[in-house]
Amino acid sequence: MISANNVTLRIGKKALFEDVNIKFTEGNCYGLIGANGAGKSTFLRILSGNLETTKGDVSITPGQRMSVLEQDHFKYDEFPVMDTVIMGNERLYQIMKEKDAIYAKEDFTDEDGMRASELEGEFAEMDGWEAESNAAMLLNGLGIDPSLHYSLMKDLNGSEKVKVLLAKALFGNPDILLLDEPTNHLDLDAIAWLEDFLIDFENTVIVVSHDRYFLNKVCTHIADIDYGKIQLYAGNYDFWYESSQLIIKQMKEANKKKEEKIKELQEFISRFSANASKSKQATSRKRALEKIELDEIRPSSRKYPYIDFRPDREIGNEVLTVEHISKTVGGVKVLNDISFIVGHDDKIAFVGGNELAKTTLFQILTGELEPDEGSYKWGVTTSQSYFPKDNTAEFDNDLTIADWLTGYSPVKDVTYVRGFLGRMLFAGDDGIKKVRVLSGGEKVRCLLSKMMISGANCLILDEPTNHLDMESITALNNGLIKFRGVELFSCHDHQFVQTTANRIMEILPDGTLIDKITTYDEYLASDVMARKRTVYTAKTENEEEV
Image (cartoon, rainbow, N blue to C red; front, side, top):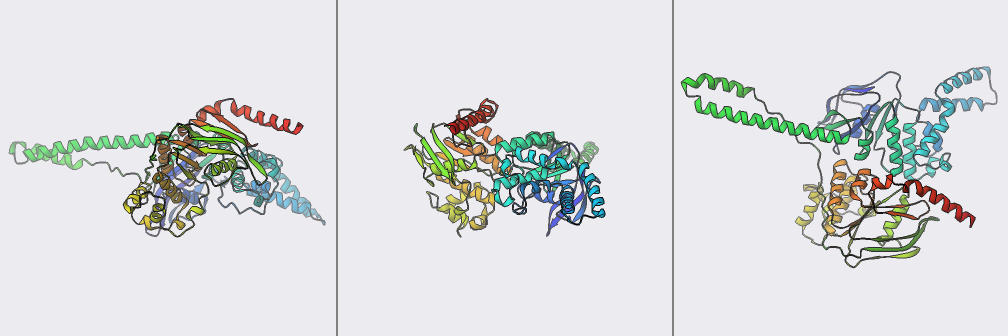
């Protein structure tokens, strides 16, 4: 068990947390939620001991081991992947290294022998002989190829490093597990594996995530941070939302009844206070009036942007035709003879683990890259707006937010442009902030403003939910559901894909395409998921025979 006892944290004069008391018990998974800036990651740092409180303390059941998902992707660059994962159990790793050092000695003494014997005993008690196989199971489950298990961390790409650090946090069955955005940069297969792992995990988990489906799947409780307090709810994210809305509704109804009673009493007092025969009744009602207190209903600190994509022109029947496109990147054929036709009602989700292939296809369709083979053609009634996964170049300038967006606006009026910024929570002086200094979430909201102001009827979005908070993801999700145009997008948010897409495309490891007109859940439930691996394996074997 881990608990926060009267925890207060002040930053300057502002209290981020005020007298927080909460217990996290064994066998439960707690989703820590709250608006951007509410202090979710900060509270995890307090629980982990990496941040001192102004007042109060954190207590952990004696003898329990805590594991934390680390965010520094370069910290272990000089270590092998396998060693990095095993470091998740620091004591076990220390024993392994000390044993290796003793056995490597040329002048092995009796004392060395006794020490080695002690270490071997402790090593066996900690299941040390299973350490590498257990680490390998975690890596395999998260999609790290066995050929990389003994590579140096610096030789892995960013997504692979994230998975290794997650495996490190999960390694060794920790008693308390703290996970800050564990699904970031994971493909949908890895997220599904992590969901199953946490569902079966028998100890304490506290997780921060913007993935609603993930929270619904794994959480037994929700800890909601709002106005420096943490309110605990039993149930998953959807249950929290329904419960919190119900509580507000009940408080409003109770206040309405109280207000009606107050009005009734005030009218009686006003009417009969000067009447001698009614004076006692009036006095009695004055006392009753003084006892009535309205419940304080504070509005949530959560802020939802308003995302509404309105195409300037209705789209025709001819939207996009892709014919036999192939592309090799870095010596690997990521797109292999890809062909498909897009209809005017299609909302297509590109799913699967082949991240580079999806980004490459989007870059080809937006004219940023040329295919090695094949062609594509957009219909004459179409106009496209693109959300790139890597937006670094877009904001590598000294423009203010308002000037930056004005450059993309068909109407150069400042009031018109600021209207779009206001919808995306850039109010007042925010418009004069330089785009170069914006946070990841702010840059995403700027790009979505650009897409809204474009009036395009075909939207191409490559991982648009990265860096967004729960409120912004919900707003974007709703905006795309309502959009009367064509969408091509990739996203790791299960609920986002399920509620938005009516067609699923998956680019397989060999660069070929599976194309199904279906929802995402139906796609996952179909035999396609089982067949595709068999088809790919058989195809590879046939190619080798030829």
